[in-house]
Image 1 (cartoon, one colour):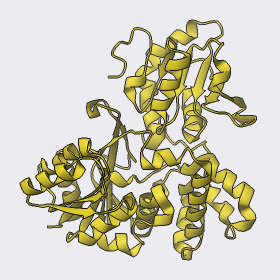
Image 2 (cartoon, rainbow, N blue to C red):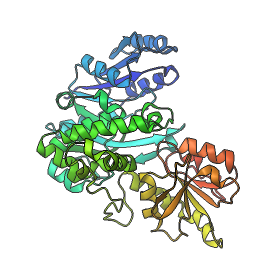
Image 3 (cartoon, one colour):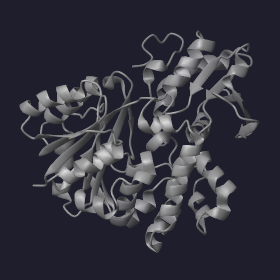
Image 4 (tube, one colour):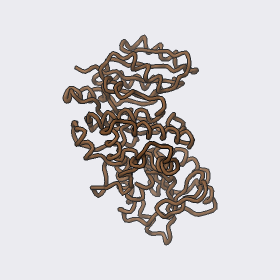
Length: 425
């Protein structure tokens, strides 16, 4: 029977880490190890963790005197793990009670598999009101060889670290959590493993991930210089891989999840990047090659399900003479949203805004403006279009347009539509 270690780095999440740990304990099939690495917390984390260590026999507590960052803390956890299979979780994540069972069963069924992915549920305050993102590869647990996986791959497929079980040997063979890859380190390692060995898909929610605009990855997305540096490292690393591995990243279009920042990097700095780096943009068009009327996978699946659930409440727009429908956000999700929006009997999108506009820009032939430029305008509907920043977007709308209707996709509590006091459910 494969042994599983749950690795949880913690830094100043004393108010949440206890629930996270207990959700891994209170399982239908408990993990063999829970390894918590306190990364130099200055709150009451250590006090809380020491109490749990006494109560939970398979909890290993590792205390770091200084804060080293989540990646190093995660790798310290790997060093202490005796199990064959690893699962990484954040200190504010929550595990469904059958996640370990599904993970263990997948490796019992497919013992040669190196990595298994499930679905990830995103939530704000209440996980029962969360949004599920899935690869939707199959309706039952199934192994996909590298060739079959690549034949099914869609440009926006994402292998999220918190919903993954990975064999320790394969994880270390790919370099583990690389410091220079920062918040994309899990994506780089796990995608590399999947392309090399294939993956097992588990059609179950394996982890519940708390949306936090101040999290490590999300907060760094606000800094274009840091993001540019990380994307450069990813490009240089992948383009230095052996030929087959490099070709899989290129042909899959896996880098398309990085959207406009990657396109800008390659456009502006192509002469200083490895030869043929532009090929990483192959298959990155946001036509997304939809093969079904409403996609079920990834971000397109989230957008499609939400639109389908709320289309009847959006038809009020058809009764307006010239409805002003504004998308808040100008990233990859917006391109997906506009593609899917047109499949519903609704008026067209009329504008796109961002929190702060830099110069003149356009997206799908629509101007991209700063939201402040609309403060004296009438807007009939805001459509929030960002997994990472919906909470901040809603706060800005509350400030400038407190009574304007809005539709959210990830933090469902933020939706406000007519005759819909229960719209977030």
